[in-house]
Image (cartoon, rainbow, N blue to C red):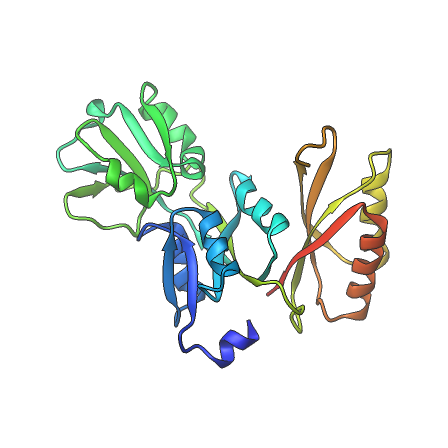
Length: 273
């Protein structure tokens, strides 16, 4: 990120589109001087980065209602990328319909899987018979609208002929999504407030506890832990763990070194403010 601060000429950042997606809002919030390049999928946004077509990519990694966004966690784990900045974005979901469409006309509702999950109570109460159909992004649902459908989109969206509900339809009005800015993996940043890593422990009693005790011994506060099945390894789990710490501090690096030696698999996924 320091290089980007020094030279913003031609700075290009990829994120999930189309125009009006939450990912684009987050990208513009984090990267005000960048040219934003919209992709069809999160994987495509990352591949643009790996291919050198952009300088950074923006990914959502956690929602305050639905938890970790698994597709993006997998990309951080599997690809040669590294998170260098985080950005919390307030999520304000609205029901979108074409002008003149009545609630009783709606037979199907389109949106990204995460958005539909975050509005499940509202949709189940007001449209119990409607089919819920996933799209690649919230903004894409606008292209699906007709006289018998609706979409779930952000309150920031504006399109001629489209009407948004007056109220935020999310189950939790304090809904937030954490986005991260990622770059191609290189040297660790010079400082951080948080460190994010993934780990696979031995399949035996107490192995996870042993990992957590390493950070306890070094006085490091774990702020997040989530498990994810290891692909093609039944009964094995990968843990995604975040802790508060400066990546440049000696005790932080020592804790990371001990954890790396202790685990069967270990990868630092990000260090950011």
